[in-house]
Image 1 (tube, helix red, strand yellow):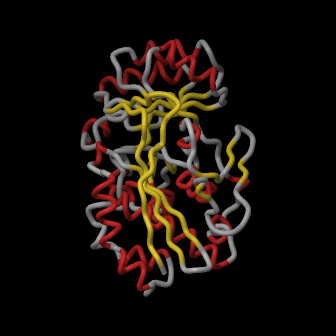
Image 2 (cartoon, rainbow, N blue to C red; image 1 turned 30 degrees about the vertical axis):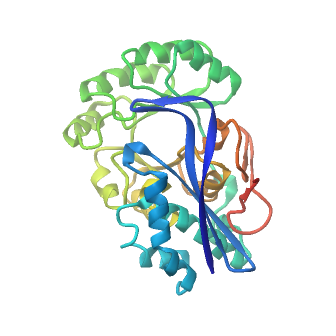
Length: 337
């Protein structure tokens, strides 16, 4: 067994802005596990908001080299458990390794990941297409560039309602709103009534991740469902979000990979909560992995590769009406260079 990992740049089509950061290029780390016959690929992005850099991600992966290459693990879940101490402060690195482990493991089984999990790809919900914060004119231009039936609108400005009203004039598509922790409880409650009239499905993470008192008020009075993102990072957060949010948005990189992500989804379902998996601005390696578990979900946000000026991989092909997986077993994404 051999472990490799390397950093790649992902240039974006447009500057991507959310409430707390902007970027034109996204760093991503690709992990490759090989055994001479099969290859498994995984991916994780860097993220300054969570303190995850290319340097500390690669350092953690190097610390896990012996664990991986000795091969004393018989499943992705087993490897994840063995690596818990190594990755306890870096779930992003563990995600990339876990994804690669699932890829090579299911290739050895001769099954696609969704087949191994017993899932039906016909049940994959439509992904939204994300419109980052910008001038209204540029946000409208981005919608016209990619005509999509479902948009996630990033907000967190002083003109959030005005932006949403103006965007509504240019499309009949459904909207989802993501404030990325930018609002107060009073704002979220007040905005929800108008946003509901504007065809918004739900609001994602309107308040700061630790404002549990405020979220209790929003949950009680909002005219729209509310989804947790920054408030639901790891498995222990799922139960904390019950009664404060109507559902959770699991980010595999923040959770530590597919292995804990699946557990979070099943726990949320057992609590009667809606489930969603979201992406970072990833290549088709990470996006294809998300697509395989998407049949479990009520909602999915897997547009990351669609936001790139140039993808470094090929994998799942997504249109408003179809999902086409790569041929062959495993996750199935392949690097182009």
